[in-house]
Length: 339
Ligand code: TYM
Image 1 (cartoon, rainbow, N blue to C red):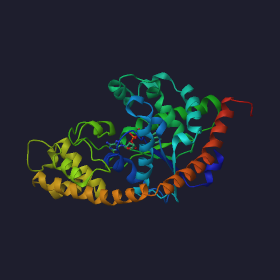
Image 2 (tube, rainbow, N blue to C red):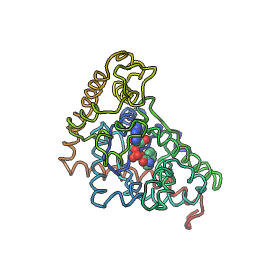
Image 3 (cartoon, protein in one colour):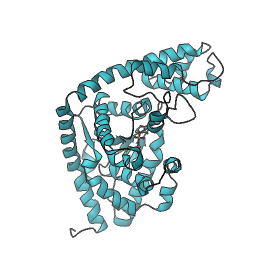
């Protein structure tokens, strides 16, 4: 842990290639990652091992394709591979190896308490053990890079607290080894709700089944506009911010996260005006963000060699950081013959 005192603070985060990325993933995660690149040393991984936790949902060929899609979306969102390390989780074997060690240090009671496990296990046909031990893998992702900050949406806060707790438990069992990470959650856009059901978080899996639920980052302009114009609001017609329904608050949050204003400032402009004005402007703001993103994405996917070279170099840089941390943890726990 001593060498870490002299470098830039580190950031690690990731997205599961388990479905089509949506505006919630962008506003909760990718948008803030981009802005951290000058201040931090950044590691952004495509967490394909996590996507296996509900194996029925992701066919192998689809997983491979989604992994490339997510990596290309990182770059299209403004992640610069010269300043940030972009890599695929399963290509850095230290993640899976440390995950086992941390799984053994994870009390079952802590894992059982995870709200995401509770909700995902309710909807899964068969609940695989990986769905339960998922936070230990996520802790490995974070701890291998000695991340100071983990920029995520609000739904991941509990998992980062878990990573802190399991790091502290490991340190207690085996001596100081891991740095304790902190969640970094944006003030606006950290919890974007479904457009069709604003009491539910916008999610990749629901988005695949229900058109009108999510705004996909790669959706066609017409589909984006239609989803926003049809978003559920309430039976009223003019905005009264003090009494706004979850659907209206969600639309205002999307606008505010894109424009960099607070929801109150945005809402003040629409106070007393018909919902249609707000929806039209939200649709324009979203399209203003997605149009250039889609164009960059198409360019990146059009040059297969480029994406491969970014991910090859990223995996190599990631291994150079993760392997020594894994080695230290193994020695601390008494694994193998090295002292
Ligand atoms: P995932 O793939 O579900 O989501 C990726 C990122 O998007 C954020 N997010 C949202 N933000 C706002 N509104 C929403 N509706 C919304 N839905 C998702 C998530 O908070 C996340 O930041 N377990 C993680 C992936 C992961 C990870 C890690 C993250 C694995 N290892 C290490 C950080 C560090 C997940 O399933 O995210």
